[in-house]
Every structure is written in C-alpha cells, then in structure tokens.
Image (tube, rainbow, N blue to C red; front, side, top):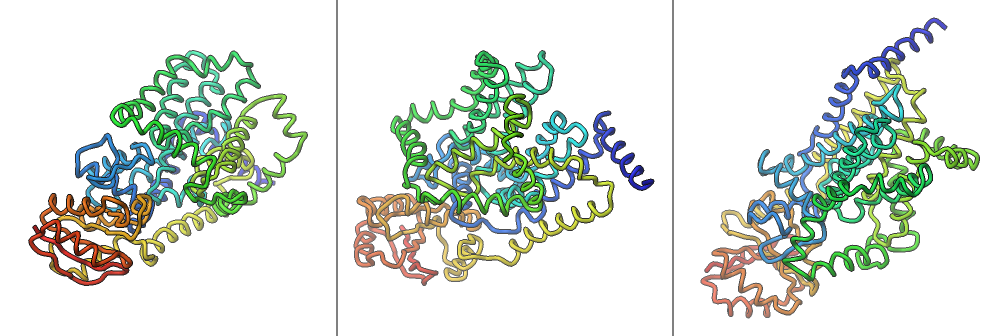
Amino acid sequence: MVKTAMTNDASARLSGSFCRGKLAPYIWLTCLLLLLGFAFQGTRAVWSTDEGRYTENALQMIYSGDYLVPAYSADRMNFTKPPMHYWAIAASVNVFGHNTWAVRTPNALAFVLTALMLCLMGRLFIPEKPWLPGLIYGCSLAPFIAANVVSTDTLLTFFEALALLGFVYAEFGGQAASRRNYIRLMWAGFGFAFLTKGPPGLLPLLAIVPFMVKRDGWRSLGRVFSPSGLAVFLVTGFSWYLVVILHHPWLLHYFLYYEVYDRIFTATHNRSPQWYGWMTTYGPAFIVGTMPWWLSLFRGMRSVASLQRLRQWWHAPGPRLFLLLWFLIPLIVFCTSRSRLPVYVLPLFMPLSLMIAIKLQHRVNLTLTRQRLLLGVWVLCLIALKAGVGIYVHPASDNRLRAEQLAAVTGNTSYSALVFVEDTAVDVGIEEHTPWGMRLYIDKPIFGIAWRKPGSAEQLCRLMHSNATLLYAVENGVDSAALETAMRKCSPHEVRHVGTWRDYSLEVSRN
C-alpha cells in the first residue's frame, strides 16, 4: 500500500509538472524522437522504385533551377505528385549536402514534429499525460519505418497534424478569441497537405464536417469554412496548381481523371485493386504497424464495438467521437479506392495514437522501473532494426549498390549522363523501372528512353547532340541492329561497347 501510494504520488507530481508548464517531459520525449528519427537515417541507400523517383525529382530541380515543374530529367516532366516533398528534399540537400542523410532529413523532422503536435492535442484530450500520444506515435512501428522511407506520406501526415491541431484548439480549446487564428492554421495545414499529395490531404475534413453538424448544427460549418480560412487554403494549396495548369492546360484533365478518378475507381495504377485488396494491404499495416501497442488497440476496438458506447458518444459528441470519425471515415475511403498501398493509411496513426493514449492513460506510469525498462528495450530494437537493414540488407533495388557495380564495370570511362534504353513502349515503364535514384551516387543526369515508343530514335539523337559523352545502358531485348542504325544516323564521333551490367549492355558515344 505504501509503495502504491508513493507511485501514485510520483505520478501526480509528474502530471502536475505539465499543468504548471514545465518542459522536462517534452524535452525527454523530443530527445527520444530525435534519436528514433535521425539515428542511422543515412545508412540505408535510396532504393528504387519510389524512393529513387522522389529523390531524382528533387535533384533535377537543383540541377535545372526549375522548382515549378517536377521532372525526372530535362526531357521528362512528372506531375504524379505536387512539388512540396521535392522542395523539402531539394532544400535539405542544398543545406546538408549531396547525400542519403540529407534526402531523408525532411521525413525524419516531420516524424518528430508530428509526434510533438500530438502532444499538444494531448494537452486537451489527456491533460494528465499530454506526452503520451506523442510517445505512442513515435514508438509505433509504422510511423517509425515510414520516417526512414523517402515518400510523401510522412510529410503529408505532418501537415495533416498541423491542420488538425488548429481544428482541435479551435473547437476544444475553449478560447473563442483565438478561434479564427486556429481555423486559419487548420486551412494552412490543409493547403500544405494538398500541395504535398493532392486530395488525400483533405480526407480529415470528411470527419470534421459530420462531427460539427452533429455537435453544433449546420450553421457551425460557417465557423469552420470561414472566408479567411478558405483564402489561406487557396493561397497555400492552389497557387501552384493554377500556375502549372495555365502553362500546361492538359494538366487539368490529367489531375482530375488520371490522378483522382483512375486511382479511386479503376485498376489503372495496379496497386492492390482486387476487391479484397484493402484487407491484404491495410490489415497487415495496422496489425504490424501498431506494435508494441497491440493489446491496448484490441481492447479499444472491443469497447468501440459496444453499441451502447457508440450511442453514448453519438448523443454526447465529444473528443472520443471526433477521434473515431477521424479514423473511420478516411479508412473507408482508402478501402473503397482501387489504388492501395500500406503507407496511405499512415495519417490514421494519429487518431489511433490519441485513442490508444486515452485508453492507456491510467496504465502507463514511466516512474516504474519495469515500464521504463520495457520502453528502453523497444527503442533499442527499433534502432537496431534501422541500423541492421541499412548495413546488411542490399536488395537489387539498392541504388548505391547499382552505382558501385556500374563503376566497377566502366572503370575510368568518363561520361556526362547515363541513358537507359528500355524494351518498352509506354512511359510508365520508364518512370517506374528506370533506377532514377542512382543519380544521388553517380552525380550525373539520368535519362530514360522507351525504345518501342514512336519517336525514340529522335529522342536518342537529341540527347546525343546535347551531351558530349553519353553512357547507354541498353536493356536485353532491345533490337541491337535497329539501335545501331539509329545511332549511326545521329553521326556520333565514336560509339564503343564497354561491357555488360546486370540486364544491360553498356555503350559509350562521343560527339
């Protein structure tokens, strides 16, 4: 009894420190998050396909000086994603240098800031332990892994966290005088999210609208969709789209049809489009991604499944109902969409972390040696996982390994750019199969030619005339006689074979 009383007293003192505004728990959590986010962040090389594509777009912006139009190379634009993530990578590389660590720094920083913003939300939802949602998010396997992957989703999650932080403080903070500013913050977050990944960045609005209508009636939407807030969103989220559509009018159809309609309603993008694809994609993402909080998650699911509990939340709308809607409604959209990847649901780990924290607030007590020890062991396991993969795992898609192997074959052969001649007739084959990420390690422009596509021979000549020395990686299956004929028509000074590399024959041309 004495020990329990002492423990409760210590826990009360710790909680009181938050109420009095002391920063010690936040400082410890921030140090932990920085360790998780940045330790061994540059050890693993950039892997293809997606990591290489995002990296190449950022490097091409730096190389060309054109930060408006994303591109793989001087002759291949890329509008599959808005430019925010490319800008972040390019800024990091300009500051920290041409290396893997710099490429991954934006996502590591976004991971840390997202967890800290969940702590700020925790001050309203879990005032006794506001740090707990950030700890849960930072130590969950899915956000931790995603922070080490070059993709848009970790940055998207950060901007959604910024938006929801504004909404939560506007509607649950109890400070009417600051509400307008918080709503503007919400729309700024949504604008940056829209500039990071387009419409998926607005999915939390599908939870905000029904919650506000249920709690305060339809008129409350005027408070959320304020003119000043919408103006902030239009400036931050739509300016780039407007500019590029004015320059390239065909982009309006591309954005609406290929990037929205096709992803939701068709199997064009070939990302688990089967009727059961949502189970095989998102089921493992949540089961594995919520480690080590499984038990609490399943207990929470059991309590949510109670009709009586749901009725109670629905008739007395509060934070729990909002968090449930924030999780469920976007999840339904992800499941019904025909384009599915595990990282798509990363933003849903924010409401999950808050709900788990509410469930665990009376169980977690880090003044207990046992709990601190378990947390420390888990953190060491996470760091060992990141280090082990970076040091010992080198798949065929490892672009640093590719560059080293290419250098071993070419030796002292000098060239100004690397051209992949692929045995395909479609641009998507070039975009997804060309190892764009090699540019980070060879520090030379990379081009891709779909050899079976009409106009490929002309593209070959344009590249040959604009570059003094080119190294061609010609995929097995390309008609060598036709390629040789096309090269002769370009009138190079010299073309010679320098070896073979993986599934490619290597040729060098000099003007």
